[in-house]
Every structure is written in structure tokens, then in C-alpha cells.
Image (cartoon, rainbow, N blue to C red; front, side, top):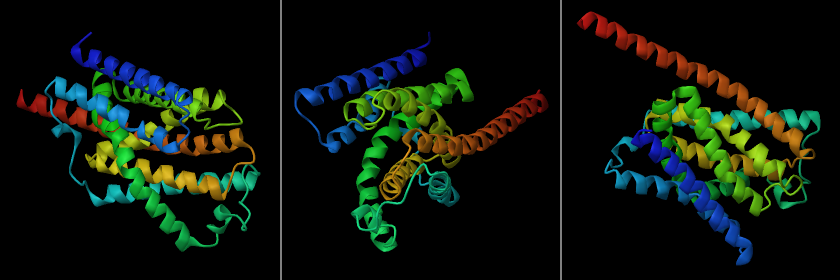
Length: 276
């Protein structure tokens, strides 16, 4: 096993075990605040930074530029389109229903300015938290996993690690009250596996850590508010609709990544042939 694979294994184990140990202490110290759970989003980034510093690799490869504007547009459109389609289908099939207009969440449906204002506030709060994850998942782990295992296997491994990392958090904070085991242990990893391709596409294309960071925060806020305004009446079916939409988007973007990768490899072979 080479040192990069050892580092990846160490990264995965430390991130998952450290997070599990911390969140396991929540009930002992009667921690119930969602902010405590949100703070755990910094754990992957801190572990990744420690490994990079230990290896003296530095942070330059993370991608600190802004990136092309078209990928910022994609960062907004991708989660918006996915969630709009998923909510519309769930409403049509009866898996979700609008919140009563008399409730705070329901009032947001008919007050778009108030909705945008609230979303903007939460987005600003969420961006640093999203960076804590994205620095690790996309900036550190993704390129190394792809280098070691190839594009498909590398992204699959990343999605599994990412999903398993969420499991103890969601289990302890009761993120799925109606499905306390199925939600954290099955539904969450599947969700992360399907999300990992669009996030990888944005990072690879933009070559900027800020694009997936924004997408991560924006998608979380968008899905959170949509869940409040259009709560699920059938949680598993509503979740399944979202996964189908994500799977379709992921398949299209994965084909694009594979085609570009094959074209790049072919160009390198042709250049080597000509130079020879």
C-alpha cells in the first residue's frame, strides 16, 4: 500500500471515528442544539488539513481561484432544477403537501421576498460550514481517490465515506424520526453517493473549491426550506423521488466527465506518438 492510500485510509477512519465519538457524547452532556451538530462539518476539513501539513504538501492544489462564471451559474441551476422537479413530482403523486398558509413555513410560499431574505441569511451562515466539508471531500479526498482507484470507483468510495460520516450525526440528532435506522444507515449514504457526481463535476470543471462550497450550502438551504414549505406526507417515497432525479442528473454528468477524460487520455497518447 503506497503512502497516498495509507493517508486516505487514515483520513477516512479518523474522520468517521472522531465524529462518532464526539456525537456520542451529545446525549451524555445533554447537547440538543443543531449548531453543535453543524459544527461537526469542520471535522473533515481539519483532518485533511492536518494530513496535508504532515506531508508538507501545502494547500495550493485545492483551487483557490474563483473559476469561470458559467460554473457558478451551474452551481445555482443544478440544485434548483433538481429540487423543483423533485418537489413538483412529489406534490403531484401526493408524497408531499403544501404547509398551511397560516403557519410560518406556509407563509413563505406566498411571500417570495421574505423567503429569499431568509434563504440569504442562512446561506451566509452555512457557507463556512460547507467549506469545512468541501475542503476535505472535494479538495483533499476526491483527487486522490480518483488517482488511486479511477473516476467511477474513486467517486463511489468518496460517496460512501461521505455518507457513512453523516450516519452517526443523523442517528443521534434524530434527523429521521419516523425511520431512525433506515434514514441514517441506508437513505443517507445513498443520497451522498448520488450527490457526489454533480459535486465532482462542478469541482473538476471549475477548478475552484468555492464553487462546490457554494453549491453545498445553497442546496442544503434550498432543500431545507422546500421541506418546510412542502413537508413530506410519505417520507420514503418523497426521498425516493429526489434520488431518481439526482440519479438522472448524475448519469448525465458522469458521462460528460468520462468522455472528457477519454478525450484527454487520447490526446496524450497522440502527442506521445507524434513526439516519438
